[in-house]
Length: 203
Figure 1 (cartoon, helix red, strand yellow):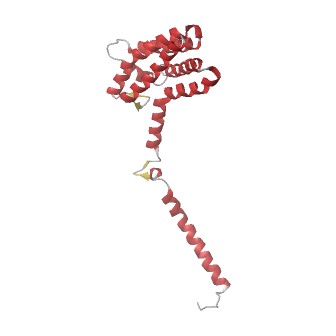
Figure 2: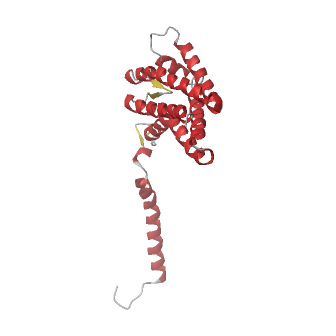
């Protein structure tokens, strides 16, 4: 079109309309390209980030007792002092772990018990009761030291079951057992907490 000439209003409208229609056709394509790869479907199976989400959930569940221990301790340390905060945090953690002894994961815990014990189901029940009694004892200052000593011995006694679960790849709640190195580090933290309660009672 020569300089100084203008197109007819009708022609401009047609061009604008065609351009808008082209953008509408391209929009779904662009949006589809922006979707994450894991949300696409392949061979009839919905990938939708399920594998990634499942791994994140499993890692969270594995660390849940430790998260409870640390969170409760940090929330209570300033208003109540470190010794009381630690006792309550440990009590909350042991109540959480004890709940698994009668929940959906009970059968998995039974399989973790070393074969030297003739009644692994009974062992799971007994250790669960011990954890509940220990948690209650931790809350009572007069018996907190005795409870902490008993729970320290309990943590040492049940650790072979954790070793067995890691070495034999026993699934717990549908997820693999915690790797032995990580499980050992977590157990050390738990033991340090119970021993700190024992020592703190004498300070």
